[in-house]
Length: 370
Image 1 (cartoon, rainbow, N blue to C red):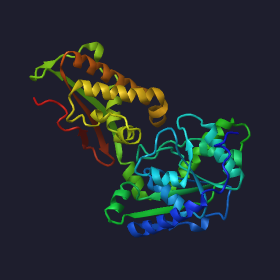
Image 2 (cartoon, rainbow, N blue to C red; image 1 turned 60 degrees about the vertical axis):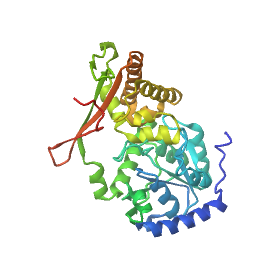
Image 3 (cartoon, helix red, strand yellow; image 1 turned 180 degrees about the vertical axis):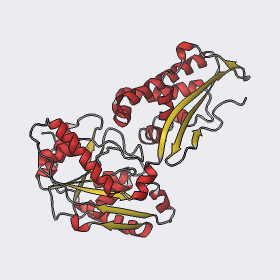
Image 4 (cartoon, helix red, strand yellow; image 1 turned 90 degrees about the vertical axis):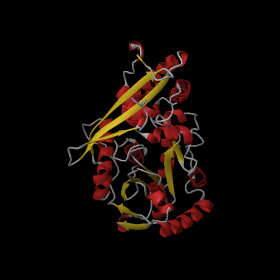
């Protein structure tokens, strides 16, 4: 067993106690939090506490308002957001390399549970989408091997709440603690993989049932979502140029979706500190060299962390986004060699549930004037 896996529980009490005290004081001052289901909190572990995840605030509430020395499992394959990193690093957590089975992280969590400890985790595995995401089987694997019950929590009012709180608008938050779920167990006639997958889905369904209806309606309001990408090359005097067929972006819809998930580029610029600002500002960036260099930097990181996109969107879409970035880089290198300008406009189209009106979102000014 590795050094990281040998986690002594509990730990860091000298710093976690003050963090919890100050965090509760700030939460009470800056938000209006309602907690239900406190009677469902078991007195001690082993226990796995799980919740829905659209922002960092759920992790804070889980730490502050459950009566345990909670060991959180959090992303370990990318640097933490520098806005929150000092607090997270001071509190301490078990880093997880997402996208593949991280045995070292799972052994660390298993060690905590085997000592009667409490693990906090988010089965969806990330905050890149507001809507509910597919549950990962890590929660089932831990529950099965540690014979640990699972405590589901549904958080509400989280989306945009931190900004509102920092503006002293005191957003209304809710933390609904559900009934304890028994440990995941083997089922006769079913492969363990199926048992774990079904267990993860049950956990996610229980969490979803605890999320306020207004949050679920807001997250699930989008239907018929589709993406398209418009790319125009022209000379500096504004004369349009035909892009060679071999440089066509065949994964245009996936590349447009990539651009319409701004958290991805936020992570690359803010957390990883890659110089890819040109990709974030397509509405004003038309220099093919800067666009190609930014795409090259992003692709270099994807070579080092190939699960960055596929973990979040699945293999087909994640691979399509990566291929689209490659094709955009190649197209911009061609434009750079010929001293052309490149205009890139990703478009998102969707309808809201209950309405047939199509909503179109695009980067204003991304295409050259007619």
